[in-house]
Amino acid sequence: MSNPVFFAPAGSLGGLVPGSVFVLEGPEARHAVTVKRLSAGEPVDISDGEGARLTGRVSEAGQGLLSVVAEEVAFEERPAVRLVLVQALAKGDRDELAIETATELGIDAVIPWQAERSIVRWKGDRAAKAHAKWQSVVTAAAKQARRAWIPEVRDLVDTTALAKAAAAADLAVILHEDAKNSLRSVIEEAGFLSNSGPDAAREVLLIVGPEGGMAPREVTRLSDAGAVTALLGHHVLRSSTAGPAAVVLLSDILGRWR
Picture 1 (spheres, rainbow, N blue to C red):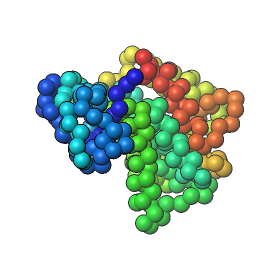
Picture 2 (cartoon, helix red, strand yellow; picture 1 turned 180 degrees about the vertical axis):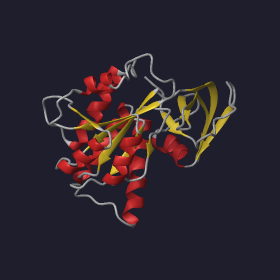
Picture 3 (cartoon, rainbow, N blue to C red; picture 1 turned 30 degrees about the vertical axis):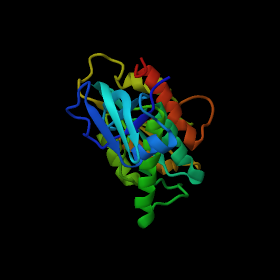
Picture 4 (spheres, one colour; picture 1 turned 90 degrees about the vertical axis):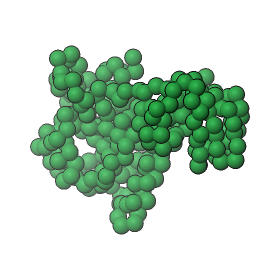
């Protein structure tokens, strides 16, 4: 069974070597001690959420702190092809379910999209609170999945801003039930399976509409900006399901799980 993971502040694991003692404090330490009830001698992983991972054993579990003796300190590189889920705001917390599941499956970043048919609206103070909630959701999901990287929740975009992001992306894919080409064929035609591609990291935007689907003019606008439509399968998926399904398929196609 894998070790439980707790997150430390970004950059806090730098310079540690086997034998070093790291002291975790704050809410994560309280969760480890009072909820997980970790005690001296138990194995645990500490990650900074940016790829660094300390594997060790608890040396002390006190009120509000957890001391861990490092057995191994490693850095996990990010995938060469990074998957970014553009998730339209959806009713009934289906958007949060989508980003939670996609995080467990390996998404690298998420972008909230205020689509034309989104019933949910992020405005004023609610926008900041909703963005913080999304970051909390993906952080908790990353912990559940024992990940060393916490996906970034980028700023909310409208369709105009999304069109600009699609134009700048290495590849932007609209997951759409009326698409003619499969997601696999789109990835192949874009050259992502070729060994002759650039060495620099590349991003694929996976664009998912709200429960009512994307407005036709949104599809046209994004397509004019360079996005391509792709079909996941013969069944129509919910807004909460399409993104995670695409992550699973692309993780296999791109060899991210090997």
